[in-house]
Image (cartoon, rainbow, N blue to C red):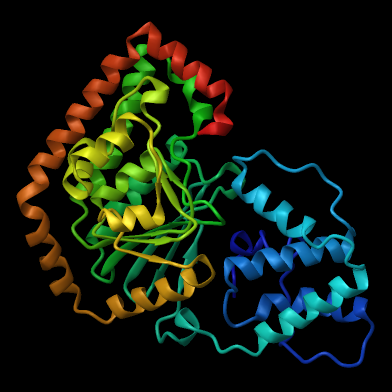
Amino acid sequence: MLSLSRRALWNPSVRRASAALRPFSAASPAEKFNQAVKDLNNVPEEPSNDVKLQLYALFKQATVGKCNVAKPDTFDFVGKAKWDAWNNLGDTSQDDAQNEYAAIVTKLAGKKAAGPAQSQEAAAVSSSGVEGLVTTFQDGAFIIRFNRPSKRNSITFEMFEGVIKLLKDAGQRDDVKFLVLTGTGEVFSSGLNLDHIPKRMQMEPAKEAVELLRRYVAEFINFPKPAIALVNGPSIGVACTILGLFDIVYASDKAFFQTPFTQLGLSPEGCSSYTFPRIMGIARACEVLMLNTPLSAKEAQKCGFVSECFPDASFQEETQKKIQEMAKLPAKSLMHSKTLVRASVLEDLHKANNLECEEIIDLFALEETKKTVMAYHRCKGKF
């Protein structure tokens, strides 16, 4: 059963239904549509992002009619994608939209479940106890999902603490083979939640915030098992820098990577001052970290920051295959392999993390930084 949080994008009024999927009879468009809304809960495999958007648009067209709302801000990635999908339907009649919606659900119902549904070990899904985080355990994979799509999956301080605890627990569990980090919707994560910024501009609160960041990064450095990132969309700020600590990074071709630190009057974090030059070369790293230059998914793959890039339409399917392949490997072998690969750089990573945090605290003491950060907060849609 798909969770509500993962289905909200493509069906805004979805309700749980206990009835099994069944074929449509010769019914009216409205009757077929209403049945499809119920049956969508029971499709055996989650649709691709493109199909989700198509379903969302058809649902709106079928229930409201032609798109009648203003176009969202450019940086509202999820809202803009949904608006575009709906607006592209133009003058499509409500009957036609209802029929097409029902036809798509019928097609989805005929697909065999892949991955989780075929697994002998059922997935266990939890809210994690922290708003904005959802966890899943399946076949040895411990999956953490940033789950604030309406806020572009920005990370709150509570989420930082939550991830720290989850990583500690996953690292100690014998049944966890590896970690997977991803995001809900069309954005991986836009980084730190900027709503926190005005409350942290004084020195003591700033030090507390930076110490939380240091512990967050340190937990990824210390994580003893393979860490895989499934970057389903834009990755910005700390959500981008932390990827340098991952063992494998898979990205959708719609993803991009950006670290706008100097725009904020700040400096690199997440060990990026150490990892980026060693992964992508000094010249490219300086462009990314100093000049705020974004990397497309293809560029990130070319310079070694991303392991492999997949078309967005097949991203979930392709990465699920990768996860399933890794789940078949011996846990101890994976863990010892990571230990050998990372052992020589652990001390350097911790030094880089500590130094980066010290520099950020020093910058927070400057009046120029405070003014820049506050100005940026007022334009936070650009983050």
